[in-house]
Picture 1 (tube, one colour):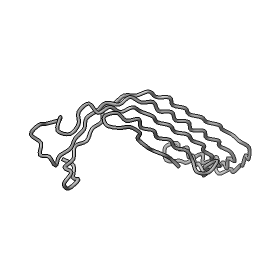
Picture 2 (cartoon, helix red, strand yellow):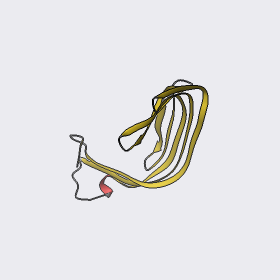
Picture 3 (cartoon, helix red, strand yellow):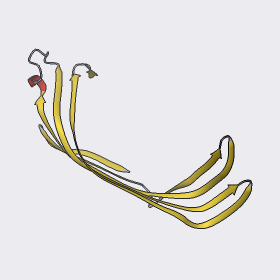
Picture 4 (cartoon, helix red, strand yellow):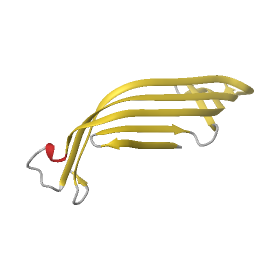
Length: 141
């Protein structure tokens, strides 16, 4: 589930985007196969659970808008060019349990949690933004 919304008035906008899973935990199955040349020597399947949080916030400033881009544009054409500065946070939390293992055709099962994996990104960024359209038929130039 997520939300994405801009707040502001031209030429300055604050953009916010946030995402998380709908259920408390998203679950599924993870498979892993190990090969030596063309021989499969190990195959495992595990139960996997994922929790995630994503947040992106940025400030966008359009320094060129509309007719300021090119004076000889027809009145039906619009355009904007701008810069943005932002921050993105991502948190992925995986729990792996219940390994069903087969090595050299011998099967085994371990039911407890075998792996916890967490990835966090904290990324400041900057960029450029822009668009150019013909407003009579909404096709891009």
